[in-house]
Image (cartoon, rainbow, N blue to C red):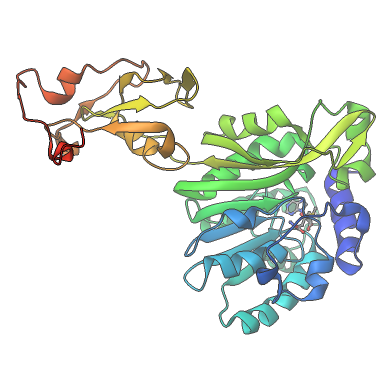
Length: 380
Ligand SMILES: C[S@@+](CC[C@H](N)C(=O)[O-])C[C@H]1O[C@@H](n2cnc3c(N)ncnc32)[C@H](O)[C@@H]1O
């Protein structure tokens, strides 16, 4: 059986009746659950809680939203200024989520959640739009099959299910492992595409401590059960890096495996990754000092920095370091004479070089001052 068919059939059944085997118990903030109908809570097949990392006003995209629980929690965390969009491919799951959305909206006093039908590895293709077009012009032969392919491509461009750079945070709870191996790379690229520059992904998923062997990958029951398609812990983080993310970190990692199969441990992790390191590099004479505690660090642009040393960085890197997740690890040094971005020369980011304090202050800087006022009162 095709893995995607196995997944769709399993979760179609899981939408109608709760299946305990698909559950990996997770703690959610009870205050947010009060408004979520019991039917939705009973069909929770998540393994983490990425909604814990959301903020007010954000636009959130939930990949594989199932019965909608993460979206309904996210709706409350982001508040009326924010919104949550759930994507799922299983009609039965979408039906449960959509039927419960007005109930949650009435209870919280605003409507900021919607559910769309799509495959998370192809977030541009609106499957409901494609469905209605194909009903009007069904596939009957090779020519109409090829036309359908063209039509799908046309829809991706003209009416994308999720537009490029339209989302602040992509979340997902126990779904990425269900996507076929051959589409995994495209999946991470799609997450990257839909995020705004400066946006982030917060993904909870099942990972394995060893590669999953082929005979386990070919088992449809294990596929739909979040086992066969799991990436390794290392491979999961690498996939974000390969797609162009930076600042990737493990926010949570279950010590205890959720399940072991033939000695391979499968456990839940929650990973965060940021979009925004791409772009031109300009010299504005800024410098940073890595505060420690490690002797040296290497960032996602290959800047290697020793603890306590003053390094030259481009304006882009300087501004990235001033935000999460780097902020707390660096000291920031502005030049005495500011260089306007419009006057800044290109900066060669392929090397990491030290910045002499004279570059920060200017070669002619010879100021001598009295002790600053912090010592007044005889404290020093
Ligand atoms: C393990 S459940 C998790 C559901 C939900 N995130 C939760 O926390 O309860 C997986 C969900 O992802 C959906 N799904 C699986 N593969 C998908 C794909 N390629 N594209 C879209 N949805 C998918 C399934 O239909 C199902 O609703």
